[in-house]
Image (cartoon, one colour):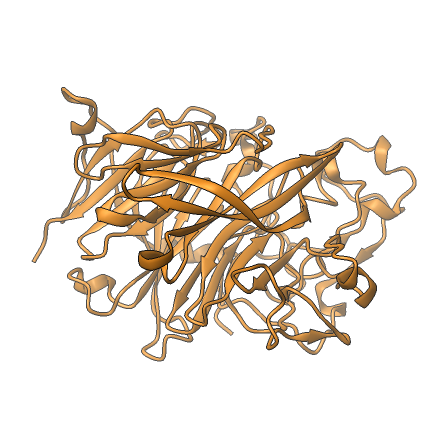
Amino acid sequence: MNRLKTAAFSLIVALAIVGFIPSAGQAEKEVPAAMPFKGKVIIDGLDEPWAMIWGPEGKLWLTERHGKRITEVDPKSGEKHILATIEEAYVGPQHEGLLGLALAPDFDKSGHLYLAYTYMDGNKEREKVVRLNYDAKDKKLSNPKTVIEGIPAGNDHQGGRLIFGPDGMLYLSKGELGHNQMSNRCKLNEAQRLPTKEEVAAKDWTAYVGKVLRMTPDGGIPEDNPELKGVKSHVFTYGHRNPQGLVFVGDVLYSVEHGPSTDDELNRLESGGNYGWPLVAGFKDDQAYVYANWSADPACESYPEDLATIPDTVPQKKESEFNEPNFKEPLKTFFTVAKDYEFSDPKYAGPQSYVRWATIGPSSVDYYPEDGPIKAWRNSLLISTLKNGSLYRVPLHSDKKQVQGDVAKYFTTQNRYRQVLVAPEGDRIYLITDNGGSVVGEDGIPTDKVKNSGAVLVFEYDGK
């Protein structure tokens, strides 16, 4: 068992960035970076960029979650071009709008791009995946065709990462909508509930929250999907809180997901695996987490959102009481703390105080290849984070199925990094930033002010 305790922070290698110093020309803003990297802002002012992939001709394609746009950005000049606007998309206060993007494996022939986004179905918020066609001559995406729709959505823990696997199947991460916490505390968390045969037959995807879904390119259920409690559906894994990052390393699928106040997770996803949430956060160690089922208390609505003490009337379960045989522990947590850990700190009091908890807010994950030019980074997972504006590097074992060695921390700025993307040549690391939100400031105090709003940043390797 490989556990990272709070003390592990002292072992992290920090390559900090002091701040952003603008120079003449938007695309020429220099980012002072620790050697051997040089950094700059390619473009800013995007409307909540959320997903970023490599499109044709070496361009960056990204979704603007609030802007309802799929946008092309030239990584050299910073020039942008709107590929499509999705008017049907529903944009709420957070987590809603245009989310994941994925090119079809045969994109060069088919021109197919897949997109996940939220929409309104009457008075209910839902999520769908559509397929669009790319016209290389007009440089436009059009003719959206629905692949799957009717997936529950909400104002929290949307998940939304979209990726094709080497098996040709499409994977979609789905959060549990933040049920059983804060403003949604009185709603039942269903990350452990599996769909019934009747629901699957009726295309009722109500149980698809807190899951990672696996589907054929046309939205069908693959024949080799796991049969869970006698039912085969799109569900590949379950028991997830808010999985926002997916990446394949060979045929191994990794994910990162947000924990509650501890235990952000790095997971290796295995078909049919149960990852424990909401009954387990991280490892089954009974450390600093107990499942409190607020929705089962008739007085739930009367409690304040940030109630720190769990009333006796709220049913509770220890992690050690969870005994599902297909439970999968995380490969690493960020970070597991002791049961006597004090989460409140007068020094950091205020609405952003949670960013000082022992979590990092992992928002995406990418793979740095074993033949890349940055020798120290070879065969590593790169994890972007929201709460402390940093990039974490986790080395992999040579079998690519396990992690090993120390975690390293890079590119720390007063920003919320939404996604990391490695250049095909391996000499540049791209990051997109949120337009705002809670983050640790340069003085170590939580703030809601970011240095670079809706930006694409690049850090270029300048070593040998």
